[in-house]
Length: 405
Length: 88
Image (cartoon, rainbow over all chains, first blue to last red; front, top):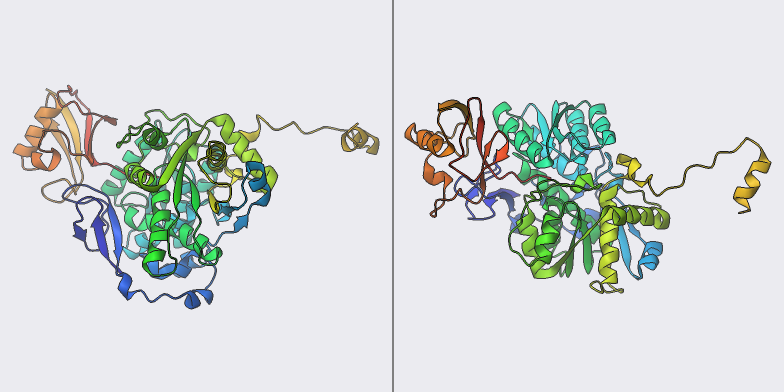
């Protein structure tokens, strides 16, 4: 179903291979499909298993059995009535992607990246990560029987490191930022012949996040939201979600794409929302990101310029500071029972801001993507949560608590 | 002069093979001149018509991104020329 790879800038085409930039202009490469040869129907889909591979015709690699059987994707789309009421909205959904096998959306691209590595006969995989991808790549590598090398900034949450280590990955913690880690991982991939899923296998890897659009459309009965709110770091996921909706239109499954795309960033690392708000056409990297939303702390977003172009066409960008992020996490947990890591708090906080600014209509059909689980960064809420009430093991000790006395 | 180690990925090198070589150069400008002279990388692969490093390429000295080609090099420095790496 895939024809090859195409440069996003100069449009030069390449056969499918381990290649991630154009050899002429060094632009990023995207997978290209022969849509005319795709004979997917809604009826066909109705009989398939509920996982991300149900859309295999629109993915670049077929999964090996060990990867298919992990049940990645097809996470719940929840009508969030209580949160909607709190925000003054009438038609809000949460795509709860924090309940994937490794508890973030990164299961989707990591699955494609590791599947591609196996297809190309690579003997090791790895990634540069702010944490979530580390765990996802490590888990899929474990299932595939490949060693995994993860390059991370040394500042990321211990819980994410522990998760990746538990799956058997070797963790290389870099004294520097995510962008330093990313560069080092790129070199390691080339010099040691490692399939770095988000670098030298990137054209295949990013395709996994398109399933976030496919699932939402299918779960809405093949309808498309008016507005989507997407936590944004490198911009790869936002781009992939948009392309997912565009592909559904291309094959005739939906009649339109979302009218408004919202990129939600942390104020402590907001290169895309800053460029958007300042009316600039270039992204100025944030040299030293400083936010509790560590999974969004990418100062030099590789897909930032492409996100910015989309936003200029039909989108919005906003950012939220640490207090607003924590409040976003609290609000989501206490209205909908979904415990998210700070990146999810960013999405809720930005949605709240845009509603207050009158930029999102209260009757819009909105889907807010929650992409990481709160158990990955449980400490961030502690500053606003009460300490447990310590009592003696006596019933009378409860009266002042339970009766409010 | 300074002996520095240079990393060139396959997508940039003339031979289409990655390279990791030692070069004796006083600054980045001279280093690039020598790389071209030795047939390792052509300057027009790295620079646009205005003489700036191409939009999707970055040059690093000891892990720090540099745009200044006059920057002095010291013994043991590590120089890399890499395509912009999309992360995340």
